Image (cartoon, rainbow, N blue to C red; front, side, top):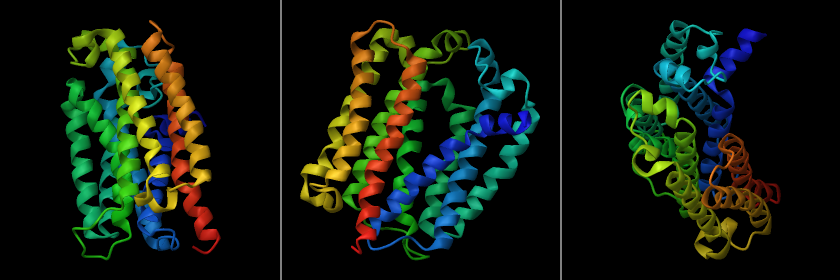
Length: 300
């Protein structure tokens, strides 16, 4: 049981599930409430997300082992010694190609998106992590791209170029800015250990206080963007949709309270608010998912 728990913690499988939900939302938005994606495509996109997410997290912890030790990250199984670094590498080499193969059987557009994202993940784990000024926005990109991937998943087999529904763009941008805020919070949390290993992050250049304020500003941008689907007709399903408004309002209250803590409090509880914002993002996913499901249930 302990080994299974350690593997789950290494691979962060809960993130894979959230990414799969984001992909499903992208697919459903692209279908405009006219039903669900084909079951085989849904399964393939789910395992693409799960395998690629899991493999890159395993590689991430392998490269981060010394930094995590300095930061006393006892939540990492490699730091605790529950899993060996060699085992983490084995998991990467098994799961990574499986994710790419799954994307190939969806369609060519998804294969290209998955391949580019996966290769960027390797560059990030191996090199970009030392330059967190860039790495933060890569992580935010990883939170945004599943919606685009989901929109591409409902295309024909050989379609490469496609038109994206505006709602897919807006949810992707919200995820990008919220993700950027969470990553900058993590930079502040890890600043001491990062400084010892030469990592270049926002706190190194502008200090912890201004970094927290910057993270708060990113959350505020996400909040502003979240209201656009409700007030603009081009977002169709979400326009004046009160089930969307209710769920996104809950998300925004959580993000707003986090922003106030980051902007006005000198030493906010970053560990608490990192978890808090992750739950807020999950509720935000539901805000985009529930209206579509209700539309499908009512028969369009």
